[in-house]
Length: 268
Figure 1 (cartoon, one colour):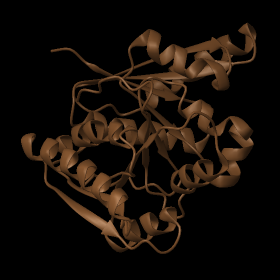
Figure 2 (cartoon, rainbow, N blue to C red):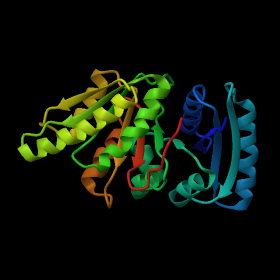
Figure 3 (cartoon, one colour):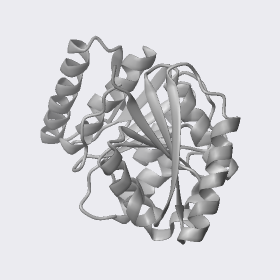
C-alpha cells in the first residue's frame, strides 16, 4: 500500500508544532509519511537545525501507519516550498500561522503567493485550532468554474472523516447570474451524489461581505474546516482580503486552500 505524503514546514515555534500535531491526527486515518522541513539561511544553520529536527522526531508519539521523516535545506519559504512539495510528491502542505499579524510578519506581501505556489493544497492551522475529527466542512463557491476546483479535494476530506459538506453560495437576483449559479450548484451536487458524500447547498443572503457571511455560517454551524479555491491572475485586494480573512479567522478554524490553476489530484 502506497503512502500519502504530508509536508510540514517546521521552525520550532509552537504554531509549527500545532501543524505537526494536526498532520499526525490526519495520519491516523490514512497511511501517511509526514515530512518535516526546515528552510535555513545557510549550510551551517541547516546542519544545526537538522539535529534539532531529529530530536523532534524522537520526542513525537507517532500513530500506527504514520512515519515521520525530516530534512533541513538552505532556501526560503517564499520560493522553495512549492518546488520541494512537487519534487517530493506531497499531497498536502500543513502549515501554521499566528493569525493576521503573524501571517504578515512571516510572509509580508507574499502571503497568498506562498500558499498558492504549490500544485498541492495548503492546510492552514492557527494556535487555537482544535485537533479533532472533521465532521462539518464549509465550501464557499462563486460564479466561476475555477471555484469548483476545491470540490473534489474537499470531498476527499469528507470521505476520510465521513463529514458533512455545506456548499455555500451567494444569492443572485440577476436572472443570468442566477442561472449560472444553478449550473455550478448542479455540477457540485451531481459530483457529491455520485461519490455518496453527505452534502447540502446553502444559499446565503446577498447583503454584506461574502467573507463575513461565510464566517458567520461557520460559527453558527460548528464548522471544523473551510475549503476554498484560489483562482485569480494576481493578488487583487478584494480577493486578498477574502482569502486572508478566512485563513486568519478568529475561531481558529483550519482552512484548506488550493490554487485552481496548479491543482493536481489529491488522494487519501
